[in-house]
Image (cartoon, rainbow, N blue to C red; front, side, top):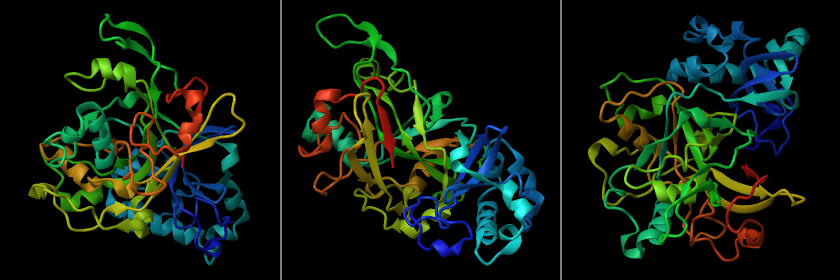
Length: 403
């Protein structure tokens, strides 16, 4: 989210900076001289350490919960709910405003409260209790279905009726920059021979976004779709690493297991949903019409441009391989959360719900499937230039960058 007005804050924000006054994402960080994990907000090249300014949250809600900003994760803050999140954002924007002297003119407080991002180590923003991955891009589901079942049977009968998803492994969700070890498992590359064991030869990336659940619901009580936005705290980028050869052999009949659970990478900064509201767009037309519990008329689709670059061990610089946009999702986050809980399943603060691979329609110039597996990639895509290096799969010591 690029800066709109550098003069809105007394903190210098470059015009091309993602951490603008309008963004203010939350994260958890530490520094060499203070290894304690603490909550911060990014603006420009700085991090505002909320543990230093807890006493400045004096609104009707947060004045009673200042201690949540002295915690090592965002879970307690997430648990406070929708009104607390909105009040906190208003307070932060007021404190960072060019016209507010509280932080601007207090040299001692300002010195203690701000940390250069280059001096910080980022950590997982929350303790993730549960992780669910959806499959909500119609283009992606169609492309993969065509690959495995043919064009006439590309989408399974349930796909247009409900947000398809599966439960992933929360313990192996890691923050950006954490190395991923190539997984080992059973594969059956030759269908005429028994399976073999070894390292995956078909390691893939998946461009996704995910949202953190905030306020919880009680076991047995669904979250109605008109209230779902009050339980969606904010969004992160996500790479759903996938070992396709392991996955292909194991997934029948219960779905992904070792082909997915070895690692999932998320970005360290959580963009609050209120910061994304200027980018909201009308929801996609859904035909057939979903069942009533999945219907909502308010717009909850977002125009978020996404890019992936790769840098191999022998490459001088990263190369862009695909681009997409979150607006291409068929099922909205409100529908995902409403469906997830309609049977009474309880979700908790810090739970992570992911979009599935974000593919765009191949007729839209400049969009790509968002993963190496997808067969619908345009011949001119830059990945084709890397085919001899990667053989269409991720090699060791390759860096992937999601933007």
